[in-house]
Length: 396
Image (cartoon, rainbow, N blue to C red; front, side):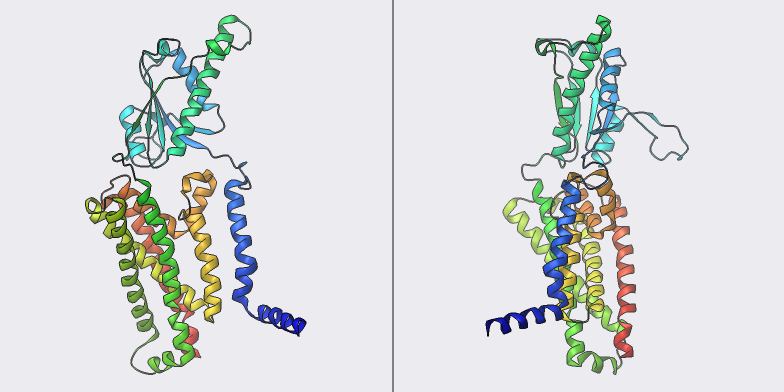
């Protein structure tokens, strides 16, 4: 009897596509995603390159040597010049100033910037701890990049010291450890206000967006149940069209999603001191845009699947994959530069970027237009795709 029951279980599994997806496809998909992120299979050796701006206010031999040492580091993408804001694409790049670098870090264009002030050349050779310090302008939302950049600065300083000693001595030689002077650093956070619980906003947004996708796909599955029970057929024989049915489902999912995000962030404000009241305008815009997009996404899954089991399998595979790639599970700045660009295909990454802009960078509503525009575009694409997939119910 036991062999018969075992064979029946395997037969049921062979007929259940959703169970097969959960058992074999989802684990492989997740393994592949994490292997690409942390295992070096991304095509760039897995190295996490830090983009850093550099402002040279010293213009001395020492500062030039330090700049060359930083630029030669393979873990650092050093930017010393940018085109002026609003200029033509053919305009020549100009050296960065302290003010321009501060603006770029605050806007999220780079997580960190070095400022080599005048007098830094003499400070690098002092043993009393005085003199000018290298100013590191940091974005507190990416502490990994900041600490990594500071470590690379020390390595570059020692390398520049050895190169200078070799040039002075006329032969390549290394300085003794006791003669190597590390750079003294002053860190200044320039993106928003310093917050002891700043990561609460990131995780509130990440978890909210991920469960919005799950909720929308599950609630959208009511279409499948209505089809199986014959309710949808009776509705379509009346005065309501399929477009009207989808519109009503989308509005329901939209209001449900807005309420879900509001509850999540209200809880964060009450329990974890999330600064919600001071960011209500930006929060409202991003919540509406995100809920609209995830609701349309849920309709696509519901119209694509044939059964509840298929919907569950699709939702688990796609939502979890999107959450891993889009940044809901861990910050995207931990990914390689190439994978960060590839993850922009996931609409939830734009939603997370918008919430980060609101709560980390104190961005105005106008500054949210790229994220809102992308989410609105995906919403229209998802609604059009759901409408086309739903034609099978009209012709059935």
